[in-house]
Image 1 (cartoon, rainbow, N blue to C red):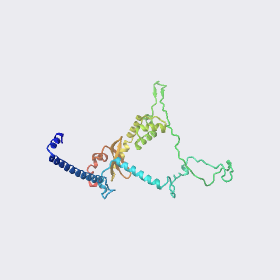
Image 2 (cartoon, rainbow, N blue to C red):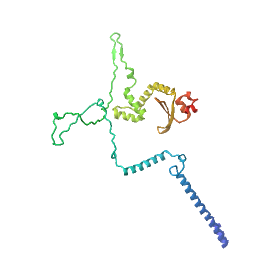
Image 3 (cartoon, rainbow, N blue to C red):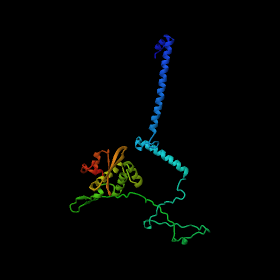
Image 4 (tube, rainbow, N blue to C red):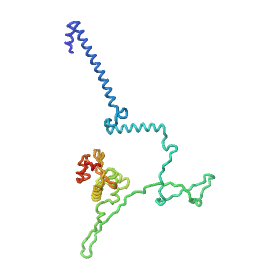
Length: 309
């Protein structure tokens, strides 16, 4: 209502003012009732939104989907709750009455070195044992320590010499063997690099640092990648034989799951038998990716009852 309209009502007399005030009071009352109903409805909706299969009789299938962050937050909260309960009821370390599970000892035939330790003096009278008295008996305690030997890369220099023929005076240079000329890194070092990068998913940069720290050799990220590429070419034949063996088996189990590559979501497809398995990272989980894995020969079978049986 504008000021001019309010002044006009006031000038029209007492009855007009009372009528307008009553109308405004009625509207305010209606708005108050509507607001109370909305608040009540909002409270009911919020309660329903918080309810799930754990706090109500609703089935688990009715629970709303949770994000990965929500699941991780709930898992952390549950772990903290269990840890708090456990710390109050249990002490750290092995519990009373618990049978220890120590590391089993290897056989003496697998031991590289045996070191004998004798007491210096008697605990009873203090007699000091001489060298002639320190003789191993039939019973002794055993404690084994496993350790890596000093790891260092063995560098072998191959020299190609040039000889002059005594007859024609032509000079000929020696040729490197094929196994040596192909790379500056030996097969065992290359196998270690490929195992760490492929099997254990160590990045090229981290592998370069590990080679320097563990083996004492400088490997650039380009060298690491070159080693992996050569290994991929060398394993192409065995890999094709493995794929053929899996896909020609009477029964093949196929599955897929989520995968992350360089922070991007991918799909890991697998085709397995009792003795072998194929793993392949694809962009998605569409049917075309499945056919790329198992081959077009199965195209007529995929989706049928015989395939999923």
